[in-house]
Image (cartoon, rainbow, N blue to C red; front, side, top):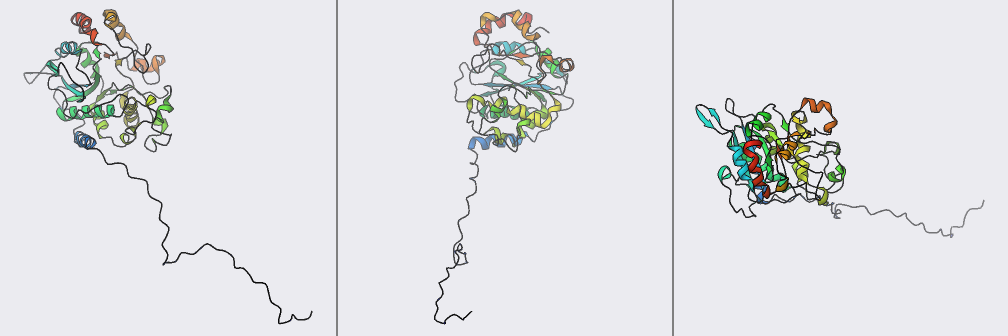
Length: 363
């Protein structure tokens, strides 16, 4: 093959295209911004945190060798229309200790300061409003916070407080004080409804967003539902006020308020995760959901009040967790009666007083 002539020109070669190389003299791309930090606590939240920290430092056991007391924790946005019935109830509680007559109870009231209270609290309820009371709203985390404030104030106020009962203004006692006291101190366990397979459980779990909102603190399999009207021992009351982990999730705003009701989820979930073996999974406050009005249970009217109604409420079967009345083991091991009932209208006071002395408050 003859050699190519020296004058032949070759086609130019195009260099391959590569992305630019950054050198020290060039600025690097701006990094992705980190997630925004959570907003700082409000002054009200800071007040609560200080109170909760103080209460979490108290002794978990009541004062030894002293009579153990019941702390009655009333959540209200109104005056107490059924207070005269409770006055009769509380007047039954005296005991003798060190040659002195002592009460076996304390009263604490969380009264929403944005509401008027006329007539003001009197008698056993006089001067029992806790100073940390703040505004509340149904179906919001404010009801969790209000119960935690009540528990904190009761823990700090009297080291003899050994049982903590959450009540509303529409609650009534179904038995005498002595019967209630003896029933509660038959066991060291708390009474709190802990339900797993209720209708719309997953919808309630995701009411603050998608399924990841509650993670990792609260997996769905640990999520529980139950009445906010519970009875805690001192150890569990302290456990509730010192919690920060679960509260960080349950205080989130609800995207679907219709299914939220955090006060019916927080306490049951917390006790289920932390110490379920020391709980009797039932509420001792009866409520009638069979005639519900929307999201509210039935409210009894004055024409329904009589000995027959009270006796029927006493005889109702307690629901133990998800076993219900069909679970004979639970019913046999925990044969407790309802001690309280709700909801009773203010017009029920007179007929209730008519049967209080001879029937309701008889031992």
